[in-house]
Structure formats: structure tokens, C-alpha cells
Length: 391
Image 1: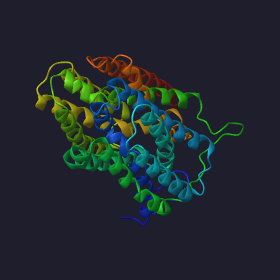
Image 2: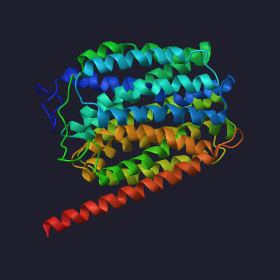
Image 3: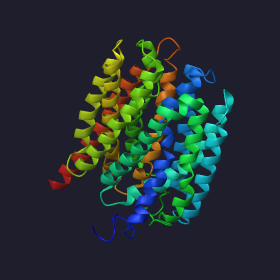
């Protein structure tokens, strides 16, 4: 191994400890996303939320997180990052503990507040990834790390914590797992080099970068539109909440494998090929949800969907870099993916009721095809420009 694990395209290389700490901060920020369906589904089973509110709460926290990531990426100079990370981690721990015993509107308020530090911690991580020489590889490492952490937390909550202490126990476990981030922040990079910015332009991406983020919004929203309503979909198929929870944590195993696959294929397979293959996999998985499938088929389908969703995710970064070589859009890619995880469940919630959750499948299919259409157009434009330069 070389002296530096991360060779940056912009700025000096980072030490292994700095890179690992930056990845860890983002992984802790995304812990909630891995147990979101389980936590909110348990709140609904306890009568503290309605089935429809599952989507609305997920949307609210995701919107706050994405907004915090975007604002930080555009307005905050990447300096004094260790103190910023430590303070954000402290606030996140307080918000997670604050969710205990909350119900109804109280859940909305506390999870809204939790999204702010989550977004800032995520920004610290994606700022490193966007500057690296092989961003899709480090994005895949990040995906594998946070999904692995989500898997461990989901297993503990499913097998022990929530059967004994319900949703409050789950949120307490989430808070305890976030405490180490306060110390980890002081081992992360304290600053990053500025990204290229043409004279007279703001720190926001150019037009094509925004279009790439729109494609990211659609494509990344497809899986959450369906996955957020996993428990209602299981109930509609005649399956118990235990089956839905098993499907969730087994799916995380598939997601870890998806992250490892993306890591192995980074730099070797073009992003659009991955989008087509994983998109077909998602459609196949959702077809199972549309019927009253037995428990084993439901769990298997959700596992394959998780594999495809994570294998797809890291390749969104090189797509945005192709559209915006300044990488300013790439810094906002993770926040856009979080935003997608908020807006898509919100849209699906409008078509979901306590008796019928299949509207989430329609939103998932629609956003998948919309994302492929936008990204396909961008890639075609890039190919034309490259051909014109060669000709």
C-alpha cells in the first residue's frame, strides 16, 4: 500500500486515517436510512404514526438532510472541518435521543432537526469523494461501509432491541451508534482544496450539472419509492411484520454485495451499462411485490432489489462528472440522492393507503424510466461532443 490511500484530483492526497474517518462520518450520518422502514413501520404498528405518515416523515428528514448537504456544498468553505463535524455529530446524537417517546407531530419535528447534522456529516464525506481521482471507486467503498453499518444495526434492532423495547429502543440504539462520530471527526481531514470555479461564476454547478442532478434525482428515487413501504407491501401480500423486517435486514446483505460489486467494477464498466442492468433487476424485483408472493419470494426479491440499488449508486458520481467536469455537481450528488430518497416516498405516499400500497410500485417504475431518459440524453450529448472534437 502506498503512503496515501486517496490520491486527490484536486488538492493534496489524504492519509489512510483521514480517508477512513471521512468515510465513517458519512456512514454514521446514513445509519437511519438503513433502518428507516423498520423504525417508522414499528411506530405505525404502535399507533404513533399512520401508514401514510411513514412516507411523509421519511420525506421530511430526507429533505432536511439533502438541503443541509446542498447548502454546505455551495456556501461553506471546506475549512475547520473537524470542529464542524464534531458539533454536527453532537447535535445528531441529541436529536436521536429526542425521538424517544415522540409520536404524531413530535416525530416530524425531531426527525426534521436530525436531518440537519446528518446532511453536514454527509457533505464532509462526499467532498472527499468528489475530489478523488477515481470517485466511483471511493463512492463504492462508502456505499459498502455505510450499508455494512446499517446491516449490523438492523440485525441488532430486529433480533433483540425492538422486540424488547419497540421503536424507542431502536432510536436509542441509533443515538448510541452516533456517539463515536464526535471523536472520529477530529481524525478526518480538516480542510479540502477548492474546486475549479470559472471567473464570474458562483459555487453552484453549470446548467448541464443541474440536469445531471435531475437525472440522479429520478434514478436514485426509484428504489426508495418502493422500499420505504416494504412493511405495508408485505401486509398486503398477507405477510407479517416479521417477514418485512427479515426482508429488510436480508436486503442489507444484498446491498453489501452490491457495494462490493460496484467497487470491483469501478473504472472497468461504463456507468450507463450499470444503470441498464440494475434497472432491469429492480423491475424484476418489483414484479414480485405486485403479487401475493410467499415469504421466501418476498425476501428474495427485496434482497435482489437492494443489491441492484447499491450497485447502481456509486456510478452516479462519474455520470455527473461527465456532465460537469468541474465536479461541483458531483459534490451535490449524494445530497441529491438523499433528496430523491425523500421526494420519491412522498410522491408514493400520495398513492398509498392503509389498504393498498401498490401505488409505490407505480412511482418506482416511473422515476426509474425518467432517470434513464435524462441520463441517456446527457450521455448522447457527451458522445456527440467527443466525436466532434475527434472529427
